[in-house]
Image 1 (cartoon, rainbow, N blue to C red):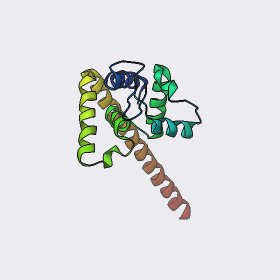
Image 2: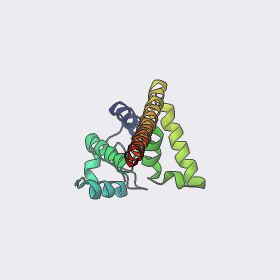
Image 3: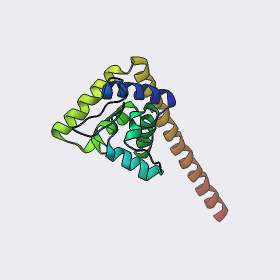
Image 4: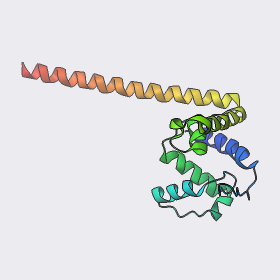
Length: 157
């Protein structure tokens, strides 16, 4: 995810999660702050990256954004959809079924509606660039292998 995409997504999620409120606490889930960081998310990030954020810290915009960014990095999130669904449904969001899957899809629909069209197009272009780079790397790898096998065959003769 590019820095530009990260900024857009963090703004959208802050609006969805807390209506841009900073001192928001969800009694049902224990989620805290503008991004509604959960204790499970925070614990995973602290353990993985050796940070020492507390739930109290999550009331701050900067710490909650830092935790969200590390969480997405930890789970290898790429674009808007992957990051938003991971934030709402956890890293195994794609395996969820039934009502839980429907809630995750509804959440993504809210996020998608708030991401400007030009940013969604930017996300798609980034996805295509990444795919092209991966494809090119595979082509180069295969070409190098072919050349190496030809050299080996030629040297053996």
